[in-house]
Each structure stands twice: as structure tokens, then as C-alpha cells.
Amino acid sequence: MSRSKKNLITALILLLFAAAFYPLCLRLIAQIYYQNSVNNVREHRYLPAIKDLEKAIHFQADDPSFWKKLGEAYQGLGKSQSVKEAFANAAKAKEAYLRASELNPIDAETAFALARGETRLEHLYPFLYPDRDPNPHYALPYFQDAIRLRPNATHYRYAFATYLYYHKKDKEFLNVIRELASMSPRAYNRLRKEQFWSPSVREAVKRGIEKAADEGVDPRNAHSILSSLLAEEKDWKGAISQFQKASLYQPFFNHSAHYSHLGRLFLENRQFEEAGESFIKALYMSETREKDLEGLLGVYQSKGYTEGFFQFYEKVRDRFLLSDKTDILLARALMNLKRYNEARRILNNLNEKKPLAEAYYWLARLANQENDLGAMELAIQKATVHDPGNSRYHLLFSQVLARRQKLSRAEQEAGLAIKWADKPSAALYVNRARIRWTNKDYAGSAVDWESAIALNPENAGYFARAADAHEKTGKLSMAMEYYQKAIELNPRHQEYRKRYNAIRQEQGK
Image (cartoon, rainbow, N blue to C red; front, side, top):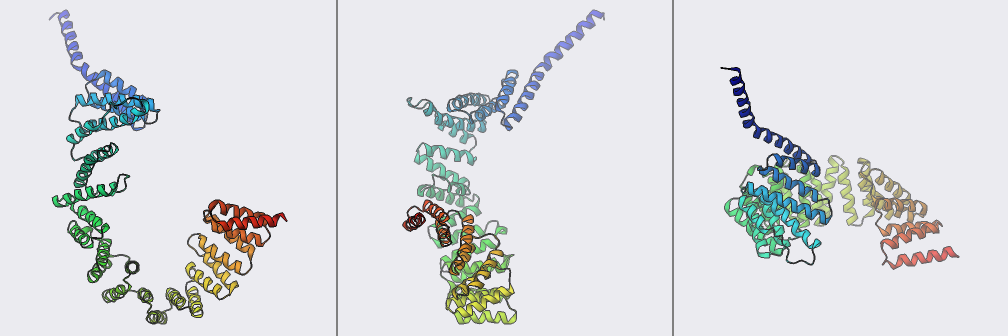
């Protein structure tokens, strides 16, 4: 073969190679620009992203992902601009999404992006063209298309429901809400926090969740939420039934709080035996049994069934090995029933075994209910001896001492209550301020009122009391200043104005 023929064949091969790989080269270049745009959009650098995407489309205009990303970039760019610029960029985003949809008509994400973009154009249009009617932008068909392409996407339906509510399409709106609840019962947790929540929306949600429960869609949550809805209606029997049905699904989730809640439902329905058994199950599973038992006392008390707690406790004591401290709960239940002698006997028996600060504290509370200040003082003093770092005990001790006019010791105990508090408390400073006032230590009282103000600067009464204390020490300017603040916080309080004017007249003499 001649040299010229070899050169010709080589040139032909190179030409064929170039022809074959040229489109791939263009595609590679386009992908590089596209990946740059993805990073820029992620970091909210929208203008560089748009430039990259325009170059990518120049090299490969038939890739729908390029157009979709361009729409996303224009959408992001319009969020931080003026109404006019935002509208222009929203329109460009729509054009890009429409092109992406033409190239890939089964892409639900693009359809949903079109729906959201068109919604934005709907909202912005009246601001730019208030005299033009009707609005040419209408997102409803785009929402319908997105849902058709991805019928199980709950966030599509949620956005669609919001759109329908905005347009006052009540029937369609409630239908979407019902469908949403039937697809995902847990949507209730979000829907009930929305501004459109209403009795009609609640009913639509309820119907949707009932359908979900019938069809076995997320059955545990469906039945549990139905139980909550029925409890709101005070249909306790229905609430119990639905909660028990929920318990049958994924029973490994039936932890202590689960049975405690069921017990509360039984208690509401006055099914005391069933309530007790559910509470006992909760205690069996609890890692903080004695603390939870105290919480159950609060439950019984809040429902007015303290006698029921007494009976329940007898069963608990038979089934569990409990510390002596839990007998204090029994004593508290008896105190609520005004069975003081029985409560006192239990607390005294505890202290005979081993002195307990908490038992002495409740003996003091019991003595207070019987108005026996001497016994109250003795009991709470013993509580502070056995637990000297308890702020609550020192507070009660200071209060009974103040009632008995033992003011110096009362002030000392009030100071210890402040010292040992877990966190600063305005109420503790108020307690000492009153004791100091009674003891005619007006300067000290003023200091405490100012400490209370620092912790609760919105309480007009604190400013007024501080003003009174400053007046007693002759600091009339300070008194007027504090009364002015009290008046600012509570301008309708006539006594504050009266006292302010009186101090101003006194200062002017």
C-alpha cells in the first residue's frame, strides 16, 4: 500500500473517531457545568448557577434535569428580591419547568415545582397589576397533575390543601384534607396546628383517619389518634376502645406511658378497677416507679378521686417492694380526704423507723391544715435539720416563724431558702422582703423587692412595694421612680397614681 493511501486511511479513521466522540465530549462539558450549578444552588449562589446552567443547556438542550435545575435556580433567586424582580424570576422559573416537563412529562417533581411556582405568580400578580382582572395564573391543574403522577406524596396534597383553602374552595379543600388523613393519619399532628384548623377540618380529618383505620393504614397511629379525638369529645368509652385497638399493633411499643394513658381514660370513664390495673402495668414497666406513683396521686386528685388512689395504693403496696418514702404518698392521699389522724400516724411511724425530712415536711403541712402553728414549727424545723440544703423546707419554716412573729429567725430561714434554691426565684425574695418589712427593716426590704424585680421585671406590684420601702427610708425620688414604673405596667391601678401623687406632694414641701 502506498504511503498516500495509508495517510488517507489514517485521516479517515481520525475523522470517524472525532465524529463518534464529539457528542460525548459535548455531553461531558454540559455535565461539568451542571454539576457546578448543583453546588451553587445548594450554597444559594443562584446567579452563578444560572450562568452554568445556560452553558450546560447550550451544549445539551434536551436534558430535562438541566431545565429543572434552572427553574430551581430562578425560584431561589426570586425569594430575596423586590416584587417586580421576584415576579420576573418566577416567570423564568416557570418557563424552565415547562420545558423540563415537555422533555419528561412523567416527572412528578417538575409538575409539583410548576404548581408551587404558579402559586407564587398568582400571589405576586395582584401586587404588580392591581387593576387587571382576572389573574392569568392558575396553579390548580399543575397540582392535579403532580398528584396524578405521584398519588402517594402526602406533601403534595398538603400544599394543595393550603392552596384550596386560600382560594376558598371549601368542598375541594375538605376532600383533600380527608384524603390526606386517610393516607397518613399522623398528618393530624401537623394539621391541628394550622390556622385553617376548624370544626369542619377536624371532622374531615376524623373521617379520613377512620377510613385509614378500616383499611389498615398505619393502624396503631390511626386508632391512637381516633382515641384522642374521641377523648376531646368526652366519648370515653369510644376513646378507650380505640386506644385498646391501637395497643394490638406493634405491641412492643406498649411502654409504661402507654398503660398510664389508658389508665387515665378508664379513670375518666369511672372504671376504677380497670384504671388501677392499667396503672399497675405502667408501674411494672417503669424505671422510675416511685416518682410515677407520685404522679398518679396527682392524676387521682385532679379528677377528684383521692379515695380511689387510697384503694389503688393498697394494691400497689401488695405487689411491689417500695421504699418507706412511698408511704408519704398514702399520707398525702389521706390528708386530701381530711383523714388527718391516719395520715399523722403513717408519717410518725415512718419517722420512728428512720427520721425522714419529707415526712416531717408533710407533718408540718398537716399541722398547718389544722392551724396548729406550734406543731407546724416543730415539724418543719426537724425537716430542715435532716435536710438542711432543701430550699422548700426553709421557705415553709420562715413562713411559720413569721406568722408566730419570730421575725429575726424567719428572716434567717428566708435567706437559707434563697441560698439553697435550685435557681433564682422572685417569690423567695418576695417572702424575705415581707418579713423584713414587718420587722421594719425597710432598706433590706427594698433590696429584696429590687431583686424580685430583676427576676420578674413585668410585675407592677413589685415596683410598687419597692417604692413603698424607699419612701419609708426617705428616698422619695427613688419611690417616685418606682411608682412611675408600676403605673406604666398597670396604668389602670388608681392606688398607684394616688400614692405617686402623695409622694410628689411630700417631696415638694
